[in-house]
Length: 96
View 1: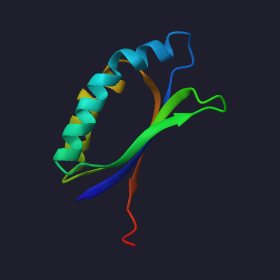
View 2 (view 1 turned 135 degrees about the vertical axis):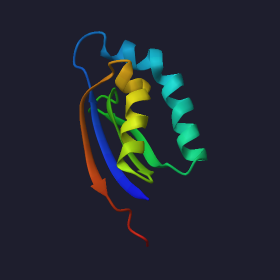
View 3 (view 1 turned 90 degrees about the vertical axis):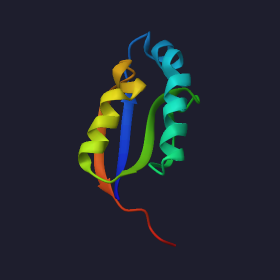
View 4 (view 1 turned 120 degrees about the vertical axis):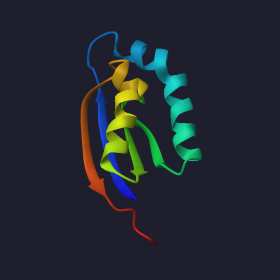
């Protein structure tokens, strides 16, 4: 499987946190499904100095890049306009 590091930042507008919280349960449901299918390795929220969620990081894996793109096209934080800046990098989890 190909592994990817996703670093995504939320919008900085006043409604950003509201958008995140609105779709968060759906995002978590999707993450649980990814984990069940062995596509989710680790992830969580990026916090600012006050503990406010401002983005996310995920390490995921898929058989093909097309599967990654398909998942991203349905990811609630993307379709819900939560993530405003998304960086996807090929990644390799260390086997330690």
